[in-house]
Figure (cartoon, helix red, strand yellow):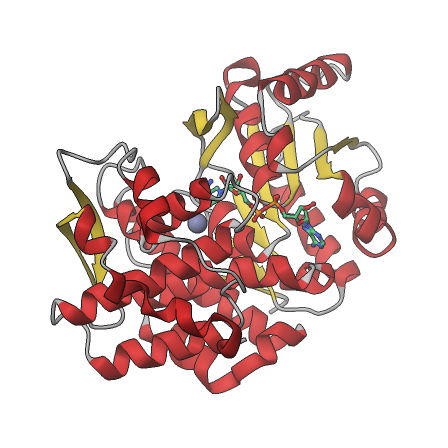
Length: 374
Ligand SMILES: NC(=O)c1ccc[n+]([C@@H]2O[C@H](COP(=O)([O-])OP(=O)(O)OC[C@H]3O[C@@H](n4cnc5c(N)ncnc54)[C@H](O)[C@@H]3O)[C@@H](O)[C@H]2O)c1
Ligand SMILES: [Zn+2]
């Protein structure tokens, strides 16, 4: 089989997920063209909405072959970067769709990182009260997390994803071969979400990473196919249980309470999302061990893995400074908030926790080794 259709418990599925196993991008473009054919509404027109950067990197081997299959497609090259994930860009997308006379029978194929699939997915959710779309994430973060599950949106008034909708794509097409051009920084950022997924939901993911060491950083295609498939299946199991984010989906926020506070305390510049999540995971596994939920050995293995993969930055945030942002957390009630605590690996519990416990120096001891672990 050229691509594997993933399965998970909980039919009916919010959307199907296919993983292209081939390391030939032109073949992958052919599979995608076939999927487009299958889901295109009668007399509908295809719009390929692609990140400019991805278009540049993948023009010859992926985009052109895709266009050759669909010469009728309208191609929209869009800027990406978090600072462009806003209502102005969204309006520009609407204008271009209108200019090309795309109507409700249209199908948008969104090809890019999480910023692009979030924004284009939201355009699909709202244009003419909603048209069909296919999500084709091209970053590791996108393939294991952002591109799956139908949460779409843009940033607004300083808040991330403040305006958005649940709008399920008709298909999610994962082609790990496209990860071949990702800068190492982006690979590491995605790996933080991979470690999160393993820690929260499936110890097998962490075992695979431990066994293969740094191979995942060297663009080992077979390994990426395996990791992307495992993580996508875990995410979809959770999404199937809680499509509209009323409870269970919160487990995907493991490491993110502290992570978000660290990211904000660095002005979203100093530490990127993946580094912030990795540090949030370091804190929370320490809390988990102290609360007797995780064994010392499991904690050590997790910390070692995060170190081996180089997910931590060279400079450390300060818990006191982080605390200021933690107390701004929307989920905070008094001085208590709810955090996902892992342990044993693959399981979690949502527990109330005081900010002072999360900020306790002992859970930040890993900072002393930042230079050494790299
Ligand atoms: N919808 C959800 O459930 C969900 C979940 C997690 C994150 N998100 C969102 O996802 C976004 C982060 O996504 P991201 O980490 O993919 O960032 P991103 O979309 O900014 O992509 C990171 C960088 O990689 C580039 N890029 C993309 N594909 C590439 C490729 N194949 N080769 C080389 N470069 C490539 C992009 O142009 C960009 O410069 C955030 O806006 C976040 O809010 C959404
Ligand atoms: Zn995240």
